[in-house]
Length: 65
Image (cartoon, rainbow, N blue to C red; front, top):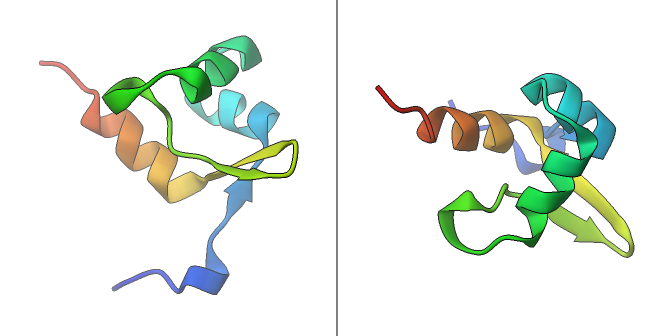
């Protein structure tokens, strides 16, 4: 089932860091990187917002076995 674009749950930097259990500075660093290391985000003026489902998909895609 596809998520309705208007029903997405957006998080700020602090919430994203809490969900991923990392420091806020780590999240900021991942927004400045290029390529696959860059965490998916939306910039609204000076504010960064993160779609919870996209962040979790990105994180699990980085898993190594």
